[in-house]
Length: 377
Image 1 (cartoon, rainbow, N blue to C red):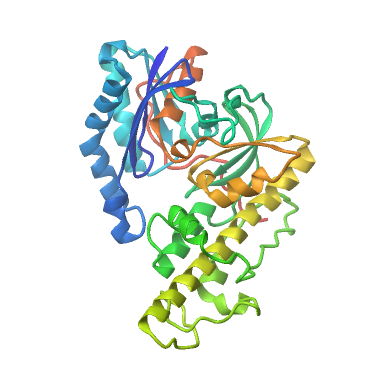
Image 2: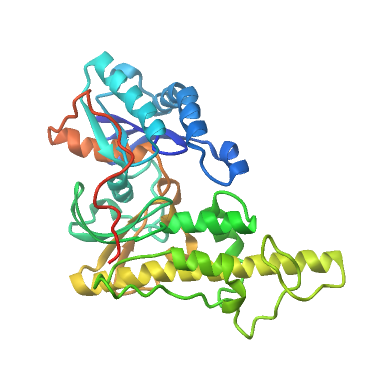
């Protein structure tokens, strides 16, 4: 069964064709990063307008790459929530119109659940077992899910493709949001997650010892928080510099430092090194916040398999830290399936449609999903 999946929840206009819920026949992602980079963040109005301009071409390209025509599509799936409302409506409306015109079954899906499904997808040339488990498509339920993106940070128990129990989530900023805000403040670039990950490769992760949040008041061992870390990195940087890390001496971004170098070349090098150290130390702490709660959940539930999804799941430090956990089986989608994409929508859409589920064409988009955010305590 060939399913056409459409994803437009934020700034990626994406479409894909997936066969029988597993094999990716095509996946096209048109990124809007150049249009939002100047603002260091997604502008909802620009995003929805670009989706309107691009959706037809992206879907046509996905069908062409899959080698099929519109008459060979057997079902439609589209993101309905969560996300930017204007962006969601573009992809959802296109998918409903396509389904109505050809009398095809249609399903509206939660794209956070689709992120968890992404690790089950297989392309024409699956990744080698050394980088991603070759049998990831056969991961049995239940397992722990780690959903990490710009809008969500969720640790959950997963009992089926559409059955999750949220164990812990952020009480303020999501982890991806914290990456973006720190990157914007220091002028590292956009999108923050990818830029900081790359910059951190040449930095010292022990140059700054940023604090971990204490969330014992509510008794939730799995709660997450990034507001305090963001404040420490942006507003209180010098309080957390380790004594062994020599102070830099230049104004880097918006942070003042103390010792003037003797040459322009020296200034550039110190600024580069200072920025890399900030990025590496921030990234290390951000990931450790996630892992502290995740490992608690693994201990308490006895579940030894962890499946990650979402844009932050592409982070190299997160992947490396989880790879060190020999007692846990940690599964990631390939990097190109961590961000928003149509293949994960088509894949999980197949599971719904093959079960007989259908969405009415009156279904509409919603920006939020209940239960994915919690107050503290």
